[in-house]
Length: 469
Image (tube, rainbow, N blue to C red; front, side, top):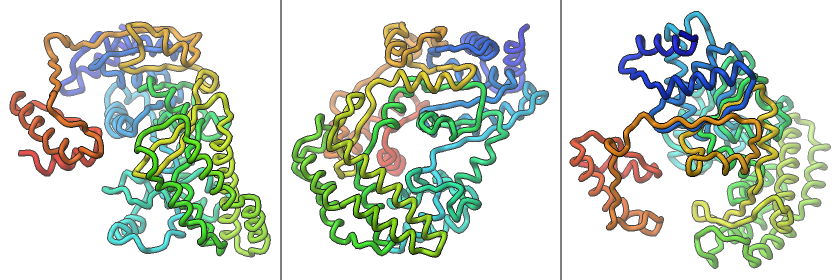
C-alpha cells in the first residue's frame, strides 16, 4: 500500500462518519505525484469527492512548504479552523508535525494609524467598534459581529502604508501576523493576495515550494480585477478627510465629489463604455483637485514637520494622491488596450471599474514562481474539456484529470424552480423575501426537515432566520 492510500486508511479509522471514496484517493494520488515530480496538474473534481483532504494530505506528506489559495474566506476558514486542525491532531500526521496559518489582505485588518485619525460621529456602532479595538489581539475584521460603515477608513490599505517606516509598525496587526508566517508549513490565502504577491515581485508572501489553487475557476477573475482599477466614493472621500486632517483646504471639494458619485441621470446598472457625460464630469473633478499643486503643498508640509508620525502620514498621503491621479487619468483616456472600462453602481453610488481582459501572461508568472502547481475546482471543464480554460490562461504544461462525483444525481437530486417568485432585484427585495420565505418553508416540510438553505445575501438570511416558522 502506498503512502497516500495508507494515510486515507488511517483517516477512515479515526474520523467518525468518514466514507471511503475511490474518487478522493484517485485525486490524492495524482496530486501526490504532481508534487513529488515538481509538475503541473489541473484536476476537476465533482461535488462530494472531498477535494480539501485530497490535496491537503499529499501536501503534508510531501514535507514541503505549500501555499493553498482559494477564492473565498469561507473556504479559507474551513481549511484553517476545521480541516488542517483535524489533520494536525490525527494519527497520520503525528509523525510529521506541521504548522499552518491563514493570511488575508490588509483590508481585513485594523490599521492603528488610520483608526486614530477617525473622529467621533458614528453613533452606537462607533462605540461598539471602540470597545472591540480596546480588546482585540488580532485586529481581524472577522472578530466583529457587524461590519462598520466606516471600515474602509480604518482598515489597512497598501496605498496608505509605509510598512517599516510607520510609527505603528511594531504593533501593526497585519505585520505581526505576517512576521509569524515565515516558518509556517502551510499558508492559506485567497487568489487576490496571490496576484498582489506577483505584482510586488513576490515580496508579499514568504517563499514556499508548492502552490495549490482551490476554486481555481475564479483565478482569472481575481487577476482581471486586481490588475485593473476602481474609482469609487469611499476612496475619494477618505482622501478628503485625510487632507482636511492635515490642515489642507478641501471643503470646496466635498459637494462636487458627492454630486459626481450620486449621479441619478443613469440607470442603476453596469454600462460599457463609460458614458461621455461621466467622463466630462470626471475631467472637471480632476481639474478641481489640481493634483500637482496638491502634491507640492503636501511636500512643503512634510519638510516643515518635526514629527515622525506626521511625516509618515503626509508621505503616505502623497502616495495615495499620486495613485488616485493615475487612476483618474486612466479612466479619462481609457487607452489601455488590455483593459475593458465600465461604470456600475455599488451601494447606490457610481463606481468606475477597469478589468484586464487577457490574463495568461500574469498567470504564467505566478505559476513559474513555484516548483509545482495544482489547480482544482468542481467546475473547470466546458463540455468535459479543459480547452477553454487552457486558452484563457495559457496552460501549456499542465496534466489533466477529470474525476466524476460519487453522487448519483439522477437518483439523488431533484431540481425545483418556482415560476411565481418576483425578481430578487433591489426594487423587489421586500416582496421577494416575503414570498420566498413561504417557498422555503414548503420545501423544508416536503423534505421532512432534512434541508440546508443557502443564501447569497446576509439580509435575506437574517430575514428568514427571524421569520421562519
